[in-house]
Length: 222
Image 1 (cartoon, rainbow, N blue to C red):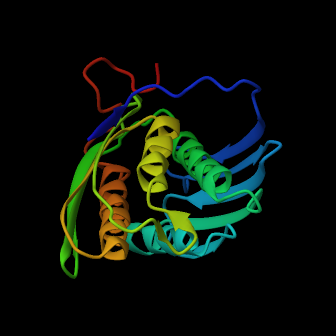
Image 2 (cartoon, one colour; image 1 turned 90 degrees about the vertical axis):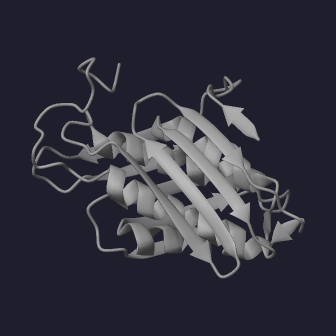
C-alpha cells in the first residue's frame, strides 16, 4: 500500500497556462497548457460533457484509459501531448495526469454546490476495483494494487500508481484506489479507471439542494 499527501518540489517550475469558464449555471470547462523541456501538453476538459474523447498522447494504453474515463464519467476531453518518448513513457504520462488534475481543480472553481464525495466499485471480468474520492481541496492518495506484468502496451505497470498520485495531488482531492483481486493486469487497470470515472462523475455533480460549499468550515479551496 502506498500513501501520498504532498507533491515533491520541482527544481525548475514549468510554464503552464489555464483558461477557465464557469459559474453556477455554466458548463465547467477549462483549457490547460503545460510546457517543460520534457513535454508539451495541451488539454481541454468539460466536466459537464457527454463522454466525448479525443486523446493523443503517443502512449496507446494511456489513450485507451483516458478515453474510457470520459466514456464512463461523461466528461469531454481533448489531449495533445508531445514528449520525450524516445527515453520512455514516464514524463509524458505523468505530465498528462498533472494537467488533467489541474483541469479538474480549475473547473470546480470554489467547489460550491458539489456533491463532493463518492465511490464506485467496478468489475472487469475477473477483476474488481474500488475508487473513492473526496473533492476536499486536500491532496492525498492511497493506492493498493499488485501487477504481475511489466507493462500494458507502452505503459509500465509501475507507473499506474504514480498516475493516480499525480492526479490526486493536482486535482487537490483525496483519492483511494484498490484492486481486490484479478488475474489479468489490463483488466485490473481498466476496472480502476472505470471506477475512477464513475466516482468522479458522481462527486462532481451539483447538488440542487445546496448553494454553498459542502464543508462545515466554509471553504474547500483554502
